[in-house]
Length: 176
Image (cartoon, rainbow, N blue to C red):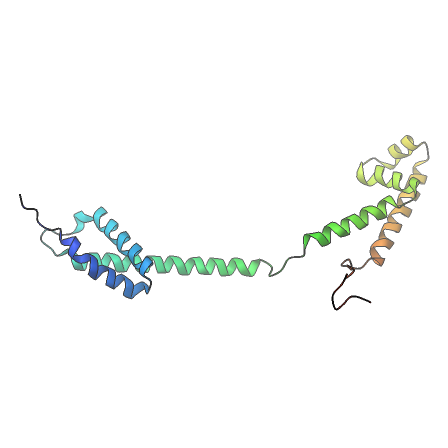
């Protein structure tokens, strides 16, 4: 029993050369040939009987190459648009953590009566009447304490630098 050689095998080298000419990359060319052969196999009924498969497979290979190129270009455009929407640099999270620690300390440094009143109103969400009843003082006194606490925290915010200054230890810039 003699088997006839599959004509597709004779097309592998020319298809790889053509794919390499299109892609200029051996691995990508091999992927493209494999993709074209798979597509050709899936659509083998479209090839007219007795017709040479070479031009048909080259057309499939070229169409797959163009499809990939269009896909890559669209992907590049989407990535470029996304890059325009994202900032090039982000603030270091430790700056925010340091700033929050400083603000927490400023809150803790408030006089006890102001800190307690502010915590009940701003953190716990009590009304001035409820806080006054809990503390055993008139609501107006609670309002006054909260106002003074907020004023102190605003003053702290106004005095504090936008970015915490870190002390340089060692190196050329260190005071010495």
